[in-house]
Length: 361
Image (cartoon, rainbow, N blue to C red; front, side, top):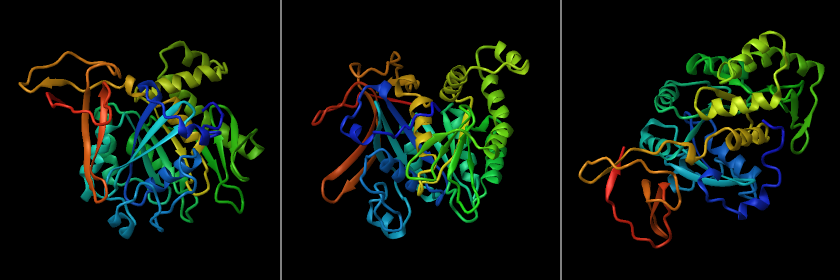
């Protein structure tokens, strides 16, 4: 959102793993089978230097699909965790299966996350299960972003799928960036509606430049709807009157109001990406790091003793009392049983013994 490449220089930062709750983002990826969730995770890992080379689902070389059955079937069948670091922020990406047969792992990912990326294929659109999951996230006010993937597909229809997501998810689903497909191209550019710049991916990497005449027309067409949607969620009630009166609202003010609205789940940005070409990856990382909330901003679950008595509310404090949930346990033939644990408060150290003394909901 700031226009600064979020992934720039990230390779060196992978050795530094932030641990404070304010510097962590727990993000679950939701979408139907084949929408490109695993490939998107792989692209983000590569863009930030977490892995040296991007794997492929077809080759069985992705980080998330490591199980023999996943490699053989070329699809995700279980919840996978993929961490990466962008600057001073650690992002835990939770890749979930898209088939209804594995809904248990999907719900485990929802419990472990603070925010969600809804991945929708640009050539398939929104299915019924994804609509239902959007409503589940809405019921608990989980912040969400819509990622329209596979922009390089021969049958990609960004405009049509965008309209479909807005019909399915509501009028607060608004593009933050608009992809541009030039003649003879699958789409090399993203028009940033807030900053009124263009991210050009036609060469190697991302170059931010001023819009061409064609891109300026696209910007003018879409920017007004975004500005109005952001201002409607602003706590400053005078902004709408000022905007309708012709005032050009300050960019930093708009960004601040946008980030607040996304974090409190009252505004849902849309971004088009192409994992294979890198289009939109930096912009998506900016949304995650700058607008998605940290665990310290997420309400902790209600806690009860083993006798059913409510416990006083805890804080998201590494030095506080331990509050954690085992999200998933798997058995590895080489290392034995492995558990993915979401820590809400306190700290778990290697070889620590933990006594279960209560439960939460």
